[in-house]
Amino acid sequence: MRYKDLDGEFLKEIKTVLKQNKFMRFDIFIISKVLKKDYMTKKISGETRAEAYHLFCKITGDRRFAAVPTVKRWFGINGYTLPRRENIFEIAYVLKMSENGLREWLMEGLGEPDVQFNDYHEVIWLYGLVNGMTWEDAEKNIETYEKRLKFEIKLEKTHSTNYLMEQFDARKRSDEKEFMEWMYMNTSSFKGYSLTTLEYVNIYKDIITEYVCNESMVSLKKFLAETDFYSWTKKKNADENERIVQKYLYYIKRKRDKNVSEGMMENIREANRIAHMSPDSRQKMLADIFSTSKSNNEFGNLTRKRLSDILNLPIQLEKNLRAGIALNELKYKDDTDICPEWVAEFIESCAKKTAVPENVKEAEDWLKSFKVENHRRCRLVQRKDLLPMILYVAQRRYTEENSRQNKEYEQNSAKEYFVNMANATLSSCGMTSINEKYKLDMVLLSTYQKDDMYSYSEVVEITSEI
Image (cartoon, rainbow, N blue to C red; front, top):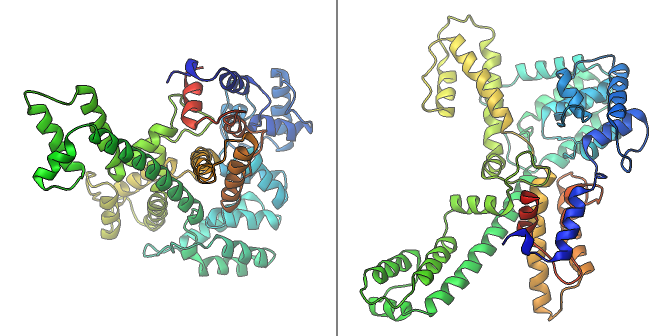
């Protein structure tokens, strides 16, 4: 479907939403904070951006949080980019923020999850912030903590976030030595990601792919019923499955007097493929539904690579942790020393085509490069990853429940169904609830029109072509 074929009112509303300039972004957030004025409803001039940037530099003592052009882009000067979570923590130290202030910058400003109590970096940073330490002292505590980590560490795949949060609250005012001992005792719990959030991704992924596969199975049976497939399988004494359908299509193709059109054969072939698709194919299908052709899309852009990174996050974070432990061990050895066997085995397990390093220098070079590259793949699950999937499931379930109760579509109840499902999920994941000040949220809410609701796929089509 081309977007020009969509309902006129829906298309008009989405276009309006996309062209409005009143939605929260980090540049608006930081400019409002620095200048102590609300710029959500005001157009921000280049002069205002420059004023905010220079004042920020002044109040932070010209601290180098990142390269100058990068920091300028935080303010929307010569482009736009988001700071990293680590940058927000460091800014919090310099500006002496409270815990709530830090959370506001992370969740509302950056649009990311709350403090990750399963990540030892963020727990140590938060402890230092609460106790008025310097950023440098907090970084030293992280370095000290990492020196005691052992390669044999086994990370627990459990729901430990709430426990760690409660334990942190009880100990955040304790002395440094006591706090760090608590950190060491709970090392196996600091896996670096929220298992709850990852489970939500998998739950929604499975529900969506099941919907699509079941729909295709219904279509497949309908198409096959219009042919002689069932009488053919009866003669063959064969059950209906993917391979038998493929054999039937091959049988039809070889027949001289074909009684099935090419179009119908293609319909059967496609429905059969989707109905019986493999897990890898299901992942690709999900990306086809939720990704857009625009790069750096501020909406959910769940590409196949992004989805793969999310689903493999536990593996990648553990590899990153072990690479760091290996580097800590190697820093006390000479460059020309023989690479320890356990380090060589780890490198080989991460990259089977990589030549085994012969000495410490080669191993260090590989591990440093690996950590940098792998770190890019270890981004936390974002609101924009989850919300499009939640919308899909909410719309399907709302339709199913209405069908069972013989009810018609009603705009407000349908929208409320989505908002309730989204907020319940977001709250469990430590993310900001649905709010019209975010462009993605407003666009998703706009899919609910007076007489009908539209899918995220249709929104994606519009955003890709406008």
